[in-house]
Image 1 (cartoon, one colour):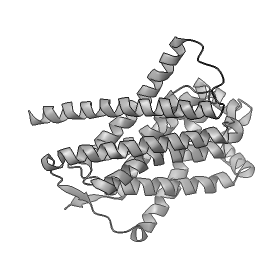
Image 2 (cartoon, rainbow, N blue to C red; image 1 turned 90 degrees about the vertical axis):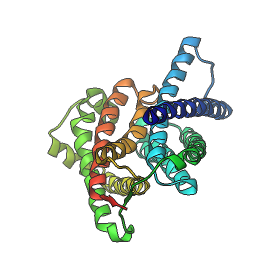
Image 3 (cartoon, rainbow, N blue to C red; image 1 turned 90 degrees about the horizontal axis):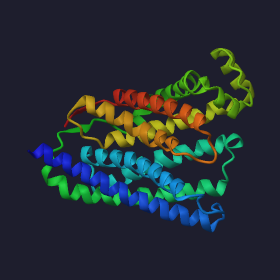
Length: 299
């Protein structure tokens, strides 16, 4: 009976948060895009407008699931929970995405101001989601018993693990990038101007020769992913170990990959499709391994 009540509550909170952040995103982003001249003509017809709104609703729905799931499984409340929700929504959904957009913007060709509008809008969404999470926690804390906490020391004492995970991310980045995303001819054409595909090691050698700094950049991103995962994991209290692994995998992959479902003017469908599966699998596995590297213990 109590379990059914919790399930109904979670569905209710997820839908409420989805509706609110969909409205905030559509109104705020639409207003700013219009002010700065990125919306020059009204939508061609009501069908296109409805379709865009449905895609946005879908994106907000999956992000809301992550927010509610994390909130219910976190032993944090108040400011600590608020900060972690900011990291989850703004950090993963926006910051980690847009720094790579900037790096590859020669191919993507997204106006810098539009990127800043996206980052700002997602920050507002993250702030609202954090406040919403605190409200939920205040209502449910007296009914939820957290039996497990993360047994970690400090970042300094775990520096070896962060270095390992940073380099592991680079391996994942190039491995899944090649064997999933790079297998799409349209994606190769989009980034390299050619549909030709080389053997993996030849491809990697060419990559080093053409842009060796990309490896350094991805090591940096690997460290950021490790730090984000560490912070989110530190706030979790999950009794079921399998759920803890799955949740961390989804937290690091869903907010990153789901935006690729939404059509945009800068990435054709084939490009988004290739990157979607690449990022979803790559970051899910990275989240699972990170959870193994930083084990929990009974409090």
